[in-house]
Image 1 (cartoon, rainbow, N blue to C red):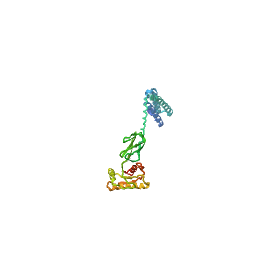
Image 2 (cartoon, one colour; image 1 turned 135 degrees about the vertical axis):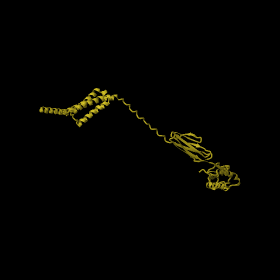
Image 3 (cartoon, rainbow, N blue to C red; image 1 turned 90 degrees about the vertical axis):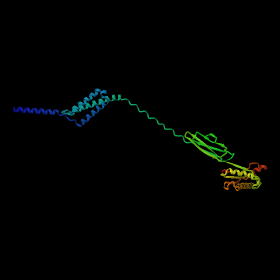
Image 4 (cartoon, rainbow, N blue to C red; image 1 turned 180 degrees about the horizontal axis):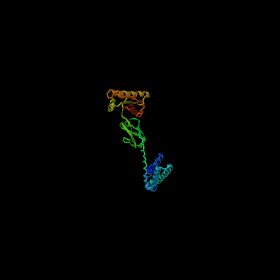
Length: 319
């Protein structure tokens, strides 16, 4: 009886030990865990690309192979690596086949994004036209009343040009004679799409009067009979009180040139002295000079012509 109890206890204990040994699962190695994660990642990637729709058979097969490999890897086999490697290889191939089937299907479903529109071509604005330039001058620079001068002008980078004082449109360069009655400014305006440019020249107009004083031959004395004529000179300097005056003496052709030159200077000095002494002009505002017989205004072969050449001209100083 005692032996039967002993054998019974030993039988129960052996059964418990066998049951515990069978229930203990095998633990996967780290490389096996890494490989399982790779297989699961491939299947997860395929799921995101609609694997259930694009490759339902391959999807189901890949899941089954992965689960089978996981199961076999945790079974307590006598020789686990032999079975685990086989099932892992099969599961990995099934995951690859799933991706290969799913990827083109998913790509075909994608709406092709329209290519971005080409960048607009930015055309830089044309450079602004060069500013025009203009010059204008007069020759002679000044004139006496009743005389003329010649305007000369030129422009650069201009498409048109005009001059005021009634002249109007002109060529881009050129010349024109003008005869101003008073001191006048002439303005040329050169233009192009970039704007205008101006240049100005002033032409002073000086006034003068001629005194026909009946100087005796070879003399420079002012006679009482000539005082009325000298009133013309007084009236002239009164009209231009702030202007320098020049008195120029002339002779006829009687006598040598050198003598006539000196005589013309004395005649000019006589008129200058008269105007200064009479208080009508300051000495520093008047000059006197002689031209001898060099500038006749009449024929020296006649008595009347010679009388006209023995003269004094008084004018604004044009220098």
